[in-house]
Length: 251
Image (cartoon, rainbow, N blue to C red; front, side, top):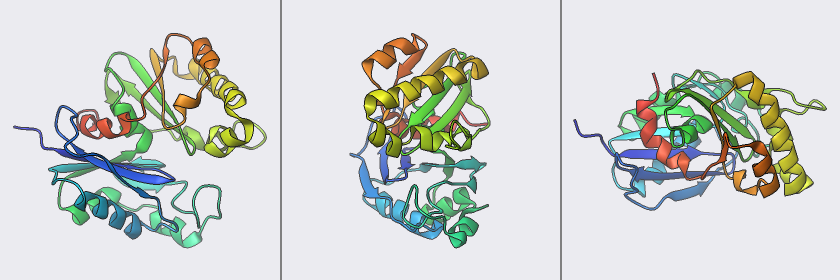
């Protein structure tokens, strides 16, 4: 059967973007974008996704990547969308309740009327990067830290590394997030990236690690050189392409 076109939606802490692609990953329209609105209950995120979809050609299925722990399309936890005004602002108890256990996959299908796949955003990003050979890991750097692991091209169960503690009580999200990059400057922040990568290496023993996300391009050339040949800095556009490939990588 012919593979349907895919609406790929990348939901971030600061922006939500979408496009429609065919089976080869060719764009059928230029991506459209909206700022992530806050406060953001599930119904409001669904409305934004539906609005973006209306600006694009019709698609036969949809892939949504969003921050946090997503299991079988259900939100276990999401870090940004439970806050009053976005990352690093106060958590709103009502939003925490609304998002906890929310079946995003079913809600997206009902809103758009097409089959849906909902994953962690770093997982979708990784689907657009990996080669399918060996143990491949993806770390995304943006508002915070995202991660995904693939074994021979199959997505492994998600581990939310961003919530782990690094130093001084900071989580990985806080330690490598955009706020700290701005505060420290790219050179100092890059050294932090290297330290974190080197601490993960003996845990995962990857065959290849990809550093992606909007801030990967800010890693200093010196740091990139010192990370070694098994670590690659990736193009941030993979988050959209991954929306197509994800359908073949999830069990």
